[in-house]
Image (cartoon, rainbow, N blue to C red; front, side, top):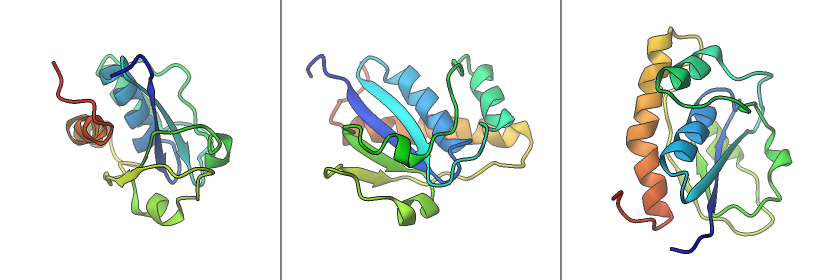
Length: 142
């Protein structure tokens, strides 16, 4: 693989929980090869406190995480778009250039106790990180 970072976009409805955790996890776990961002179809005003706390408990940085509208990032050259909920998949916009995409839905823990956010965080790490690695042809973890 070249020195070139692969740019990945995680897309969900509110960009306040699942996509934010996906962004933080992939930037941490695949940070040498992948630059992840997230956006929402209808972004909320803030990232869910449960998502922030679940990331902090895993020792992951949360600085700079904030909900973004898809329009703010749509012109960027993504190598992969990952929709994390059915609503985002159905409403996924047409990007200016063709971008490979995968759909990998996760439970929305909004309104649940912290344990719900932790379970989704762990599910994202277990299923999404390997799926992104495979979709980008990054090979197995050393």
